[in-house]
Every structure is written in C-alpha cells, then in structure tokens.
Length: 286
Ligand code: PMP
Image (cartoon, rainbow, N blue to C red; front, side, top):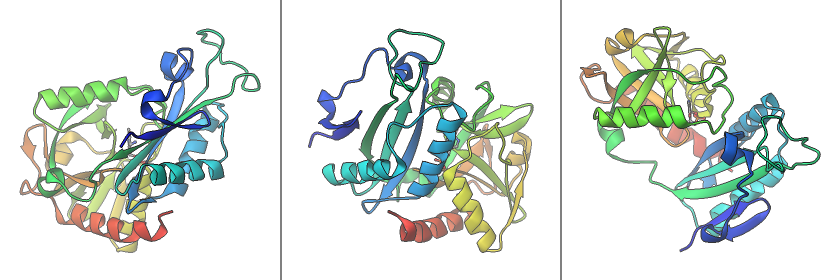
C-alpha cells in the first residue's frame, strides 16, 4: 500500500508529495516538529504534543498554517487513510518558502508556513531493546542553547547517534559541563535507592511529553523523584537507568560507557513505569 502523506493542504501518495526548494525547513532547518505515537489506531497524548508545538512556534515567532483542531483532524485522516494501528505520526511546520534564501525571516503575512505530516508503522509495544535494555555512550553536548524548542536542527543528535553505533551502543547520552543533559532523542533518568533522578526543565533540554506523564505517574505511585543534574559517574553507580520518548515510552539502559548498570538487566522501576504508562495513556488517547 502506498503511504498517503499530508503536504500543505493536500493528501497525496508519498511519491507525489513535493515541497519547494526554497522552503526554509529545507534550506535552514527553520522548522519545528512533533512525533506522536499511535497505539491501537489512536494518538497518545495529542494534547501534550499540540501544546509543545504551539510553544515551539511561539518561541520562534512562527505561525501555524492550521489550527490545532485541524491538526487533530489531519492526524486522524492519516491514521485512517494508512490504516495505521501501531507506530507514529511525524509532523513538521516550517517558516515556509520565501522568494529566495535569506537570513531575514519573511513576513508571515506574505509567506505562509509549510506543513508536512506522515505516518510510520512501527512496533512500539515489544522488542529486543525492551527485553534486554540498551547500551549508551556519553558524548559532549554541543547543540545550540535552545533545546527546549523542538526544531529540525538534528544534525548533531544524528551524528552523536552514529558515533554511538560505531562504538556498539544504541544511543548517546549528551554531557555538558560534566552533567548529562539528555539522550540524542530522549530524556535521561537514573534510579538510586528507589529515587528517580532526572535533569530539571530548562532551556538545556527538550521538555519531553513522555517525561511529564512518567513523572506524574511516578508521583502518583508514591515514587520519589529528584529533578536535578547527574554525572555519567553517578549514572554508572546507579541501580538502574532509562530513557523516555514518545515512541520509546520508557526504555531501559543497562550499560553506560562500557560500565554495567546494576545487574545489567532492565530495572524494576523503569519496567513498572512503562507498565503504568501503557495502562494509563490509552485511556486518554484520541
Ligand atoms: N529529548 C530530545 C532531544 C528529543 O529529541 C526527544 C524526542 N523528540 C525527547 C527528549 C523526548 O521527548 P518526547 O517524550 O516528547 O518524545
């Protein structure tokens, strides 16, 4: 089945979808994005993703070409048209295509933002990485300073992930001034003596939508949470480690820079949080 995608107002087969070479998303990564997971044909935490999208757009003085209600409808159309049961939807809004390449932003009254959405089918509920956990390696965090804005400037996270793969790991945990910021595409956590430790929100990290839900569920389950930075050394001595993201939910991490975490198996806290997440989130799925 040819995938149907959404581009600037049209539903098209992916092979017929086109964007301008002057689109600023293409020329300058002048674009923001969201990835929402789909379970049982329904969107997990659409409201959270829509709220963060609006914040990203606001911080960059970009105007969405569609309303959030229209955006929800487009998501639903794509799920239906692609018969998507499990996976996700990628959404990107750009500042649109100006008449030329220009560092100066075009007037939003004259140049409408560009919008692209597509579905991807992916098994999210099971897999080897969940059963066995993943290995990560640390790398210096040299991304720009507004990581709270979800932009498509992903060259460094992609580079970091490739470096990790070369070292036989699945992901990189990024480190700035000696402390872990986050994973290449996820938020990072450790657990020590029953306390869940994760970096506090600031412009240094993306405000993960999954992070917000996981911390809420942890608090409801009377688990202790400390929002503070931690080092790689502290992580290596932790009882367990994990990462969260919209499509990974809670992903156990069992090795950091070649050092086994705890007994080298996925830990009970991340497993329990994943169970709660998988139980609760479908209840509010749209
Ligand atoms: N940090 C970064 C850098 C990410 O790219 C992502 C995933 N987009 C996350 C954290 C996790 O965010 P979310 O839970 O909203 O997917």
